[in-house]
Length: 257
Image (cartoon, rainbow, N blue to C red; front, top):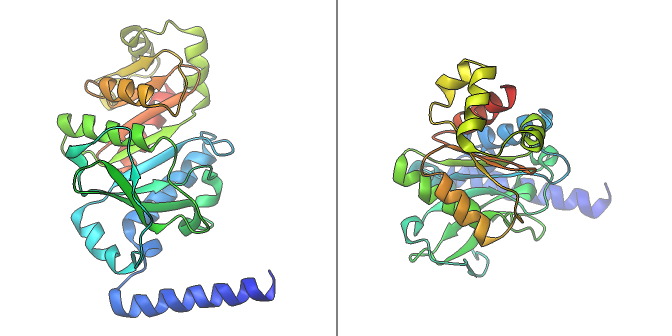
């Protein structure tokens, strides 16, 4: 670390400490942020997030927003239009992983590898209000995450988390198993009886298609209407949960089965 790097680190810590004295606990020290960071790190340690694979988002509760807003940027980023308006999420704020970020690095520098975005009052655009230090932006899968949040909110108002990962065994299973949601689910249930209790609604399976597009986001959101786990054939899995532990545990249970 050079002199200017050290000076910048001291400055950053000083600003954080000063804000902390006025506004409370810094964003990185908030309980929900620590849990989010842990989920990212645990997923990498499980082998689900090679390189920059996978992403995650958390819909912030009102108390989360209240405790963090004193640390939001005085000048947020410019508004970025979404592919289509998401009125049901108007004004909501999300903690999201950064595009191209490596999950193994999230715990080392949260402010660079995750950030908070807010949607405008029509749900048509988003902007950055915290994090993504160094010019980062939210994951390219952000539209898919947001559509997933809307879909699961209609089924369960408590849903707050969407996690996308690349579990090795589930991906391998899509290479050798019939890509039928009912039969895929029955195989998982037969492999581990506890999977029936954890995933009573089963899993839905989508055939392979290009990721990072609105089309796959729309189809994933459709599948979320009847299941909390959606498997992308030859790619990975999406899971929605009421909490960070819930979403992680769904993937963990399916992968174990």
